Length: 87
Image (cartoon, rainbow, N blue to C red; front, side, top):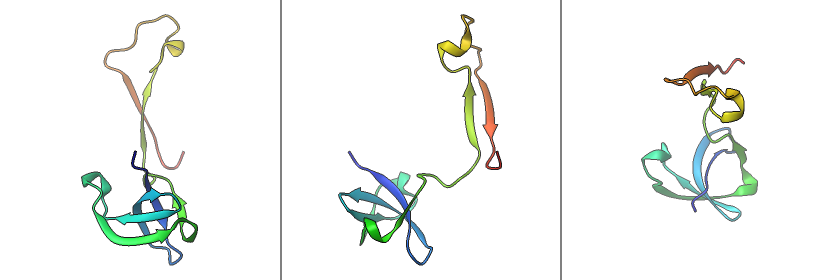
């Protein structure tokens, strides 16, 4: 299983990579277009790990599991709401 990560270098620049033990194989961004290795490798200890995605609004689905429905049928269409970065 591949372990994709985002990281910040000591100079503040950010990147994406594949975690391989205590090493990072740097990949070209955006990584969802395929993990194209750049040839650069970094020590995990030399970088700061970042959240997997850049902070943005999160799209949430309300009443998405049975215990929240209280015996009622699930709404159709589902209830969607946003959690903005500022919340």
